[in-house]
Amino acid sequence: MKPWEIARGRINCMHVISVLQEYLDGTLDHDQAKQIALHIEDCRRCGLEASVFTQIKSVLQGFDAPAERETLEHLRQFGERLVYQSEPKND
Image (cartoon, rainbow, N blue to C red):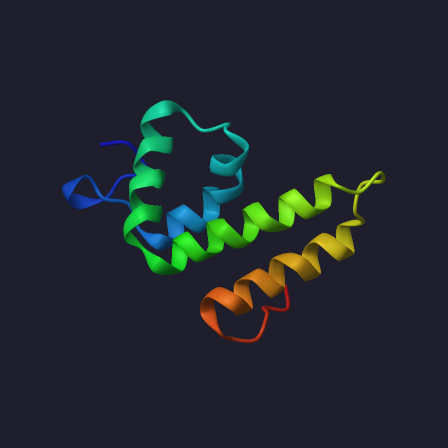
């Protein structure tokens, strides 16, 4: 079993969130990307997270200058609050 798999060939939300940006960037291997895609289709929370990340990425690509790190962090926290309806983590 590969490290990102769990019992019965399913992956969990924690793993999906940890590799979601890589999945959206197309940098995961084919097998892992397929598992993530299946999970996103079945899981409302992860699907919403993927949708929010995709929308944010699309908007940011419209800017001429790259976004500052602090701005990106605020957007990430906003996405987390949308998905989990909680306050952002203070890392």
